[in-house]
Length: 113
Length: 116
Image (cartoon, rainbow over all chains, first blue to last red):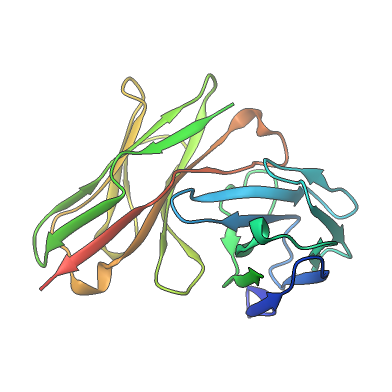
């Protein structure tokens, strides 16, 4: 079992370019999350999907969109990248009601020039 | 809304010495509490969690934490650290009012550096 996988591991974009960060989990978990990590700020929630077919905004959703493609996959899209979106992005999943632990992927490091 | 404060951004400590990483939270409702560890260039790994019951929680790698409701704290401790414990540690909280989403709110992190 791979757990939570993220692609790509690294990406460099120019301002205005678009890209999609991919996340997949083989844990059969219901809920999935996207966070960004910036120095001195911990992790902040961008979007989440409580279950297949639903998505909701988190603390910092501006400039991002998400798609819960199926139970396994949850993608994050940057339509027009900005330097302020330079960050490390983590995907996480959680089994569901009564299961409180979130499991994290290895992260995608994004640099926007 | 809930918030988490990690009082120390950096904690240097000598090998085999004890360490305490401090975490305070703010919430108007009951909470679940977590400590995660992040090794360089890796994702986050759960160290331990408090959901209910005994306020002293034991985790992996010899770490433990104590939930103190009156002081709204969840400090992480280890009696004797190793070089391999060098990492960044995050305290996080979710509340029972988060519904099915169970959003985590993280502190800003504490970099633990174990010196030989």
